Image 1: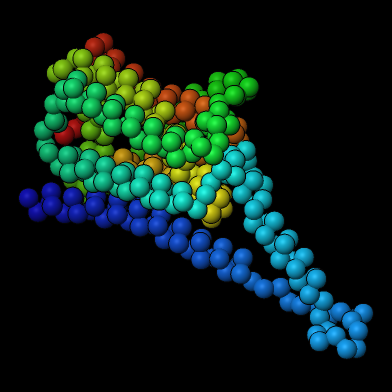
Image 2: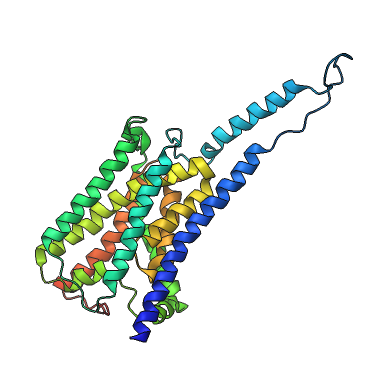
Length: 323
């Protein structure tokens, strides 16, 4: 009982720490940005000022510096990568806070569910309800942006370089190598010991152990198709560009990736998912199209789902996920 309680507290501390770090990161970036933008230029003496001029300083130069400063602030987010931010408004702070709050709630709800030693049986109706909830989230996100920019331009849907999508399996292999390295150094074993439970996600356990075959098929579709679409539109399509416009590229990458990782509600997987989130944002920046991170995400989830289904319905021996 004491070990279970300490493990749960450790998981709460990890997830809370990830969310808190994301918040502190943004607050520090905003404070630094505010100080930089409010730095007043030093007036330069005007050697050609008339003797009766009230001040010997050339204020035209000051105005020019201020205009240049404003121009730099407006263009700075666009100097790296291809993710547009011109559509972002100050009111989007409410959209970002609302979406992040939902994933904070979801993380701790998943954490509470993981405390149950028995894998809960999820019906097909329950999976369809999740489809509806996440469909509503996407609809809200699109509605927040729709009047300002067309979705095609917002998400770079007219992508021409589809050959780049062929590199998605290579990115997934790279992530598997990262996971293998973390396992080799004992990261997962240490986290499982501290958490008092397996690092396997509840969704993976359900794929292997849920008795409702229809629910399993729907969960596979949700993991391999719907989750990449929904999470990429929300995290990379909306939250990241909004934060990029306000605080710059790298703080925005870390913020969106931290919320993405902790939002899954699995303390042991927070670090690997953080790395995956960073990779997904960078792929979005380099291509300018949401299709690239969606493809990588779908390949990553699809490979995991495929292995679990083969282990369940085929003859491929895989270690059973521990409770």
